[in-house]
Amino acid sequence: MDMASDIHMPGPVCLIENTNTQLVVNPEALKILSAITQPVVVVAIVGLYRTGKSYLMNKLAGQQKGFSLGSTVQSHTKGIWMWCVPHPKKPNHTLVLLDTEGLGDVEKGDNQNDSWIFALAILLSSTFVYNSMGTINQQAMDQLHYVTELTEKIRAKSSPDANEVEDSADFVSFFPDFVWTVRDFSLELEVDGKPISADEYLENSLKLRKGTSSIDKNYNLPRLCIRKFFPKKKCFIFDRPTHRKKLGQLETMHDDELDPEFVQQAADFCSYIFSKSKVKTLSGGIQVNGPRLETLVLTYVDAISSGDLPCMENAVLALAQIENSAAVKKAIAHYDQQMGEKVELPSETLQELLDLHMASEKEAIEVFMKNSFKDVDHLFQKELADQLEKKRDDFCKENMKASSDRCSALLKDIFHSLEEDIKQGVYSKPGGYHLLMQTVNELKKKYLQEPRKGIQSEEVLHAYLSSKESVIDAILQTDQTLTEKEKEIEVQRVKAESAEAAAKMLEEMQKKNQQMMEEKERSYQEHLKQLTEKMEQERAQLMAEQERALSLKLQEQAKLLKEGFQNESRQLHREIESLKNKLKNTGGGGGCILI
Image (cartoon, rainbow, N blue to C red; front, side, top):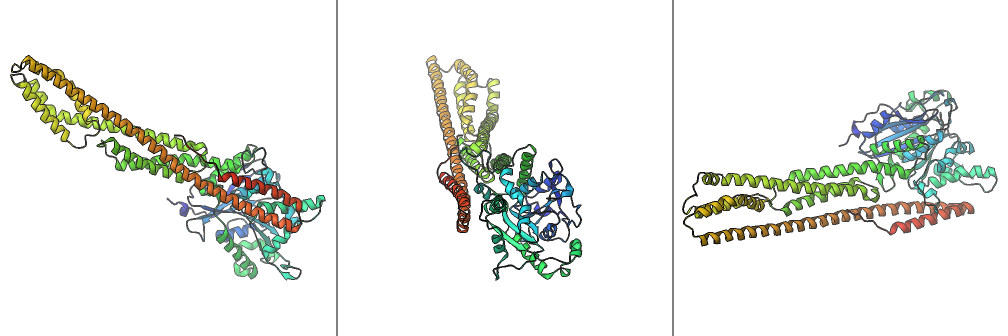
């Protein structure tokens, strides 16, 4: 079911409010996210207040108004605002726009949470837009000081190995793509008289300074952080849209009243975001939808509120707990539906029921595997296996009862007239015993010819005839046409027949036990097979992620070496070696499930 098309947000709502003392999640915004079943492309715009962020966000939302353009300093509630709209270029996708309000806004009082807002915008987005005014100069870099604090604000893993330094590669694998938008740009795009692109301008602006003074270090630190954390970078420059006096009326002005260059630049920016921004994806290739984004928001904000660092691994595990639990329910519901449609009790044989169970179980495991991820120690799969085993045992009990009930009803119906005749004394006469046995055999034959009696057919018949033994024996003993010798022979024959029936039932019971054992083994093998396939896929996904991170690292190291920064290159080299070891370890190993 696709509910995303039902979401009509006329404007943004506050997602995370940044009060003086704490971050507060807005339940109304979470409710909106919980209804979005489509994959989400999450674009966050960060920048100091009054840098024209809102105009770009409104353009991305396809609206003239929505995000406040804040022509006065008293802008909206401080924090992160959210606007969900159908993706204009990707069918069946939702574009989630996040706008940070009040970063560096002195009028908003205590700014201790600003760096958290910055970190959350990075953690939640798939494309991170940093918006600044003028040029990419040291002031613009200084305003981006939050990026230098990221390693103190975010963890990739809940518990890094003691001998393993948590490096930027761990972040790169889940950090968003970086887009720098430079507003009111007034310089010529050229170096040494030669024209350069906006991207080249950004690359030049991020070059490091040689030198070891504190000024050099302060100059290099934000640049180094941007280069390490955001391997994929893009830059857009914008002319001033209109006269300074009219800037406050930007949201009421039409495109034909604005500078044509600016209008084209804004269109190019939107086109890039719509075509290049990726679906928000977590480690392991897990695509994020509305409910998953909701869980991420809650997990990260809860961690910050309780004094911890928001941790990517913990967020994914929290998400996995919710989704794996739902995956078990979904798998069981599928099993119930399949069995409900296919099973007709009583089944003719036990194997017939077990085959239906096995086919439904196989599909149920597939449903679980499709909807689960990061099932640590396979706990949820074990829970599924336990529930399916109980379901199978319950079906077997129901099958036995259905068979017993049908057989008992048949016997009552078929043997009713005989029982009445016995009560009336029809067989209490000379030659009566022979007549009785003849009738019993005919009725037995009639009973055995009845279809779909199920697996209890012999047992119920045996029990019924055993209950009549004393009555039949009394008729035998009073039949005057038979000699004592003949009566003795008949008693022995009946005993032998009963013993043979009992032996046959024992053999049948052993056969059923064998079938149950074989079914358990088949079930175990099916779980193992599907688990192994899933683990192979996850391992391949992890290796691809690590190889991508390694490739980006090597590119950055090559650039640093080319620029002559040996120390920074050595630090990167250590991180590269760490990554290579991880890749080596990912290639081996394996897993097993015990059910």
